[in-house]
Length: 122
Image (spheres, rainbow, N blue to C red):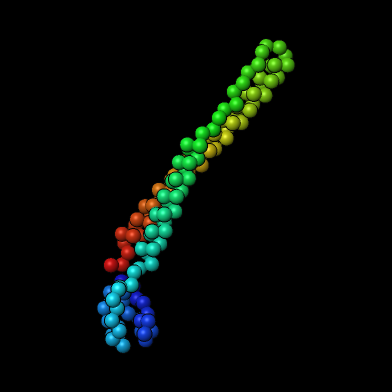
């Protein structure tokens, strides 16, 4: 149960009160807890972060996979292609890690927001 100030007289009252005990002002709507709004915001941010993670996942990353013939010059080219593929694999691993991290953060935000919504002062 939270305490708020009456808009008429400034006396502290419960968010459950229907009338101010000091001035008698009637409250048509009870005050909502700030936890509810905070919980909604956390859920929205969580959903947006999961959408971002799915966007990263489904964007698709192409591989640079090309090989050349068999002489010394093409051997150097093949080495360069191998290095480029290795760097790209590292990049793909980092992108996958970021996707997992963002998904976990989004899930935690949704769960925390749900907790705040469920435990708001009634």
